Image (cartoon, rainbow, N blue to C red; front, side):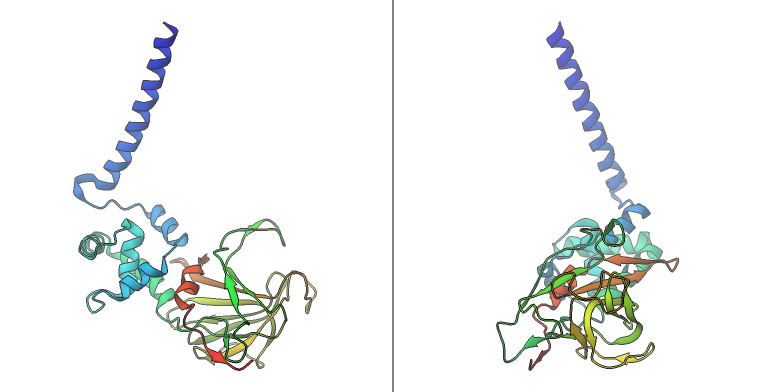
Length: 277
């Protein structure tokens, strides 16, 4: 009798789990239509992760009909890699949810449309002076309180402040400059499509920038350092030399939020500005 009761309980749990799974499937595929959840939409975007190989596949598609951003958005929603299936999903979503679609594509355009160069220059005369980076976005950080890491760190093989030139990944306008306790000497550049590219822990700026000043993609803007993690301006040495590279957007209500910069760095990894240093 006891064994029978245990079997009944197990069967009951299995049925509940199956019902939950089935309900989720029905919500996603009800009447063969794509069901849209605004909360999932925002969460999906803010936690984006685009494989650079998939991004390259999008570049090979018919971009005269669909923008790269549209293909990326389609990938985020369905994970489709078939061009035919993806095109069908894009058409379906764009027709059913035009406002959300336009918002999503504007986010994607803001990130991808203007980027041209990797943010750290490559040395022409010292090939052993390399850099490396991992996906450190939203990893735990404690300086200034427990928080998520809003960017990716590009680490230097030559741990010398002021050695590596930092370049602007895009055209844009200087929006913020100066000292921050967390970011040290930082520079914030707003691109033409609206992304805010954030360069932190700099050793120095290449010149005295002022807010509103234009910069061009590939222009040297400063030098990699180890400044920051202090309220005292000029503090260095609290960590190894590196560049913190972040990307921020504003949502429909004007609220700023961070997006993962790792995929952009992967895409730009072979597009480095080369100079003598």
